[in-house]
Image 1 (tube, rainbow, N blue to C red):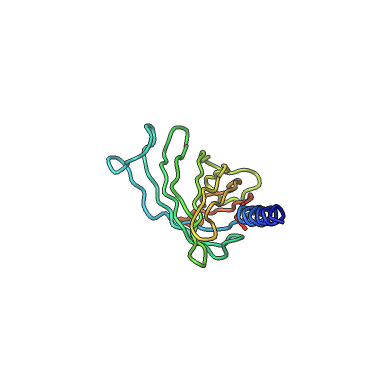
Image 2 (image 1 turned 45 degrees about the vertical axis):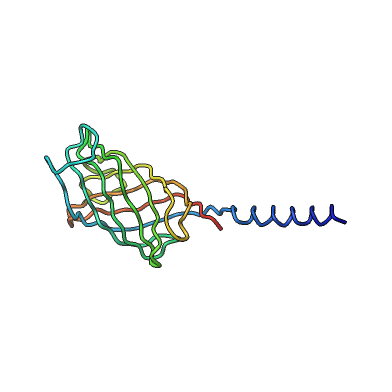
Length: 169
């Protein structure tokens, strides 16, 4: 009888632990517009690798799956060799106040591709990764690709991201 109780107890504990660590992976899509808040140059540039000549701060708003209405900030080294930017210290804040951290790096390319509207002046299509967060985004992971551009019609950056996000259940 004691053996059965021990096995049942172990089974329930195992089930409980398994259910606490389960995750779900979902499609992630985000559309948002950024406002260049600050561009640091010269001696103002700190904490950037050699070769990066500016630090850029962009505040943004938009929508994203799993987050609803979003706001957030990009803070990254830019003006690097061949238009590179890296590393980013960035995050989304969901409409309920939870934060999702991410990082991306890549290269800004002058001009546009054939699938861009005529008003695109530069673009970047680079990888991003999720780095956890607060609240329901604690332990979040995932990745995807940016599809971003600057425009001759306004002073903003425009962003469309697609990928996957893995969340704890």
